[in-house]
Image (cartoon, rainbow, N blue to C red; front, top):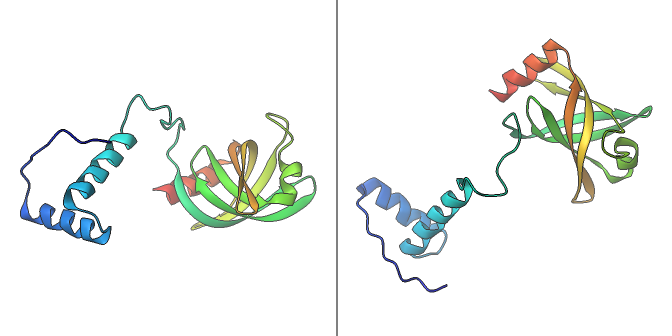
Length: 157
C-alpha cells in the first residue's frame, strides 16, 4: 500500500522514548511502529466492525482446571474464558458428542475451584470449535445458585 499522507504530532520525551523502544524491540522504524499501534487501536475500537463484542458480560481469560459431567461420565477440562453469563471450556475431543447434541438439545455440569470455594454450574453448550487436539465449547450458564454467582463475580473483579 502506498503511503501518501504525513502526520506530525507533539508528544512528551517519555512517550517518544517508549515508542522508540517498542520500535527497536519489534525491529521496525519508529514510523512503522506508530502506524502499527494506531492501526491496532482503530481496529479494536471501530464501531462499524462486524466483530464487535456481543456478550452481555465481559469475559476474563483464564486457565482454570475443571470437570465436565454429562450422561453419567466425567471428563477433565480447562476453562479458558469465564464471565457471569458463561464459559469457554476446552474438553477432550472424544467427549464432545456427549456434551453437544445440537443447539438447545444438551446440557452439562461443570465444577471448578475459585478462591472462596468450589463452583458447580449447569451449562448449555452453544459453540463448538476444534483447538489443538481438544475441542473448545462455549456455553451459557443455565442454573447456578447465588453463592456460585457470587464466587464467579468476586473472581472477575
